Image (cartoon, rainbow, N blue to C red; front, side, top):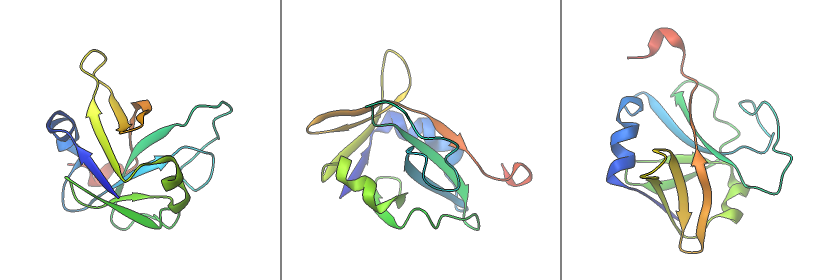
Length: 121
């Protein structure tokens, strides 16, 4: 499985990507330490979580190869994904969207920066 990250998306992610950062593509389903509540709808909702290397990522036990390095996911969230996924920026709304050859999986993927405040650059 591969996550293609468009050039525009890479530019928007630049402030978050550094050696100590961990990128997580989180299926926001109410499961895990960083999910406050589940989504009570038929929509599939993803978020990009930014963690530090030492923060707990035990809920995310699978990695995807991508243009920006390893991206962690919950192993069961892959059932929603195709072998080739694309993270790109919606040109009109300037939000991330997650696509596959089958169509748009999530049209609004927010970034949630969960790094400790004192370690942010």
